[in-house]
Length: 113
Image (tube, rainbow, N blue to C red):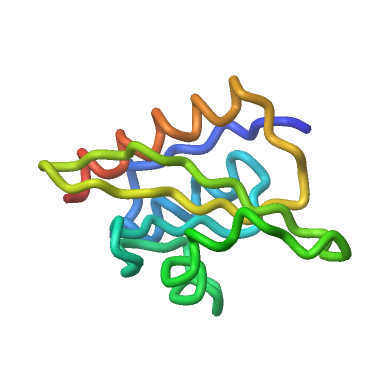
C-alpha cells in the first residue's frame, strides 16, 4: 500500500474533485461524506454515494463474500454539523492512514465549505 502525493486543493474546481484526489491518494474505491441523518453532503462520485449515505448505520455488517470493505469515519464536524465519512476500499486501512484521511477530509471541508 503506497500513498501517492496528490494535491487535494490547488487546481481543483470543486469539493468533488478534491475528494477524487483523496480517493486517488489513498487508493480508495469511493469516499462519501454524509450528514448524521443519512444525506449525501459530498462524494468522490460513484453510483453508490446515496446508498452509502442512506445506509451507513447498517453498513457495519458486511457480506463476507464482498471484496470491498466499508470503513466509517465518525466525528467529522464542520460549522457545527456532524458528518461521517464513508470509505469503500479494496485495501485494509491502518489506524495511522485513517487519521491522515480524517485530517485531509477536514482540510477539504474547511477549504470548500
